[in-house]
Amino acid sequence: MKKLEFSITIDASPERVWEIIIGKDTYSLWTAPFAEGSTVETDWKKGSKALFGDGKGNGMVSKIVESIPGKFLSIKHLGELKNGVEDPTTYQGEEWGEALENYTLKEVDGKTLWIVNMDMNEKYAQYMEDTWPLALAKVKELAEKS
Image (cartoon, helix red, strand yellow):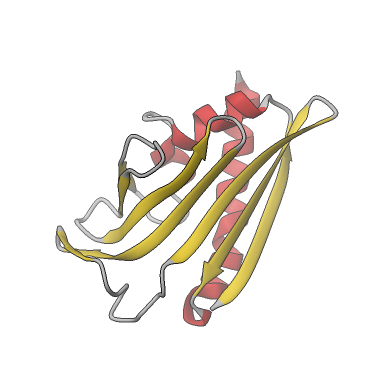
């Protein structure tokens, strides 16, 4: 498992950035670089299940490990959603070992520093390194727009 980190500074409050990240109307916009039409089913509360989908019935089965609005979100990826069926043991046929994806929001000089830390299967690391900067830029665009 490879550890990845991405970050961006956004000219908006941490609360505004949080709203964009988890927002019902904005989630699919900023996650489109990963999968056009992406979806999420969760209440974003600590201990809750989360189903991250590609809009075609496939995706990831996860759990919200921690959720502190405007500050920190930790997601544990447990397994795969394939054709709408949950398989909590593998992702795309491979063991993931309960990978974590953490979002930290810090206020710095009136702006927000958003840091993403994640455990990633080596096979998908390059894809994430290519795609996360696009997703971060979209959150920045959405948060700074209003």
